[in-house]
Length: 475
Length: 50
Image 1 (cartoon, rainbow over the protein chains, first blue to last red):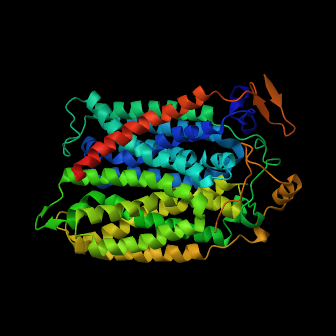
Image 2 (image 1 turned 120 degrees about the horizontal axis):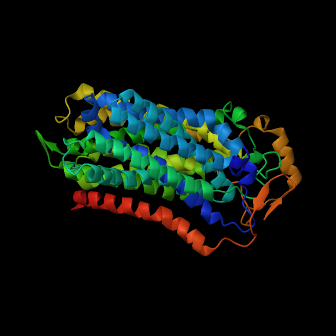
Image 3 (image 1 turned 180 degrees about the vertical axis):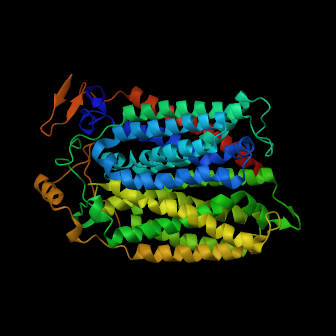
């Protein structure tokens, strides 16, 4: 269709002089929007009351969305790479916005399956496409600082929840003046919920479309055959199909899975965990409001870790920084189990560091992939790797809740009841640490001959800003 | 005005550098909601520290 030609990859190439500093805000428009998914719990009480359902039935909405994120990123990663970031970001905006609109209809007519379909399935596809759509473009614009570039965008995913949580409560309060977010047992009315979903869907649609309008590929990247791709270590330029057959991909999958499993276990249980660690009889010395403050601090650490650690990886290398996430993380878990209950300050500092490593692991992985496989299809490879996130999203809470369910009833648990779960996380992190140690340079047999020949024929390269490019540091 | 390159890609518009104002506005667009979210979270987190 001629009218949609501006979405084509070849028409997304930047004109000479286009600032590369417009690319991070374009990416942030998408990631700040889709990061809303981590704030979904603000609707939980209202949705349980609306549908007169169990908490589990409502929790499925979030779970479906996260599983669809992993699946769509894996399945559509190559499509995103071939069609360019603008078409992908528009598709993500339409899916994410439509997900809210269909969800709004589901709430209005009282149909939970429609909410599963809308927010869970359609919105989840938008999450997957949106998450990976700007990542490879950022790496192409900032070939010498891929960690910094992807850290900026993926930090936005963490930041999206910080915005969505108060914004959602604000909207619910506007549409339903009786609603009080401070009263955990008081849900908003169905009409307020439906109107809030509708409003959020429209706001996110517009915000993401602005991002799509700003995004550009660097000059020379409009056509895959002639693009000046940056090779990884050892001159690696590997296509997604070949990459997933390499031991490096499998090992990195394990690394991401272990890092996410360990972090998500704490994140999912954060508020009750801090209260249980400081329980004296039936009462905890940490109030519900203080526990909510702790959850807020974890969100900040998660977001900061994405930017700070990912940027640091450009200097110290990808392999060493994952040794820190997993190795130091492992020690922090042991310290949390051993000394966590001695003071809230010790508990909070240890938990903040652990969650910063969790965020850092997410943000650094695209740069790690770039180092290993080159930029040829790094977005598509990243998409396939995100299945580790979907799997860990199920496994982390299963481990923690499995041990806690066996230990006793919520509200009666103490610090010792968390020890089996924390020690399990230590083992999980140890497995990830070993997997990271085993990652070596990709064998030449996996390289794409045509891309390597094309690169060799082109000679030396500079980044789009005219600075010398390096192949990064998987040291 | 648009030009077509050897590889078939097209770039449109002028070749002058992007205005610093446009870059600043784009960053403002994402920074304002992020600052709102950060502030709200800090207020919540202060309950633990206070």
